[in-house]
Figure 1 (cartoon, protein in one colour):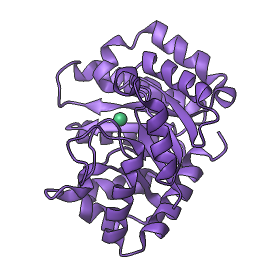
Figure 2: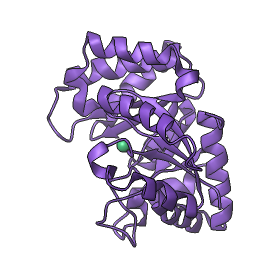
Figure 3: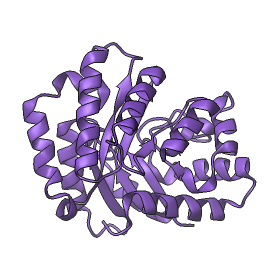
Figure 4: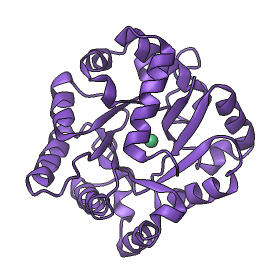
Length: 269
Ligand SMILES: [Zn+2]
């Protein structure tokens, strides 16, 4: 099996500082050939870039995204914008293949919606200008998110393939709107939980060529690892569940989702 884990926060130093080499080894042994390092702040965007460089020979390809998560939107200031631009101007040498994770999150009230909207729209602009897909996080903010995406779409400020809606947990109707805009949908551990509700229907409906698998490590470990710290090696359980829902072999699902991620992010960085 060849699997592309398209969302893992291995660049959270405290979570993996003791055993990062073991985690990468486990991933390799589980058939993971490519990991997309997910970032949520300027600091961990920088750590992702360092980690990619430091682990060049680990046997698993590492790619990076840079961006500021909605929970940190209050810290999205001039300095943050300048740093992102500085990296994006050298995206090819640095292995930056996406802007993320960015988005809207009304679940925690860390930051007012207005701050989040400013940071989100600004970073969507960066993704458009530097011709990169966006990795988007949305929680409890679906309506506003769709409103902004539709506006960007109308103003022709969205790429033809705008990016991925990461850890998608929305309805079939929302999924259809996003698919029409050209988005991919990423799914994680929760699809393996007994109480998974909307995701199975969305996966059954979603065209095979728009599905991505993710771990969102260290969060959301899939069954049978639920409750533990997550790591990319466990992405195979997400692949297996997705294959079961689509009624195809797991190897086939691994191959398809790897091709999808390579189409979206590129395969050589
Ligand atoms: Zn994430």
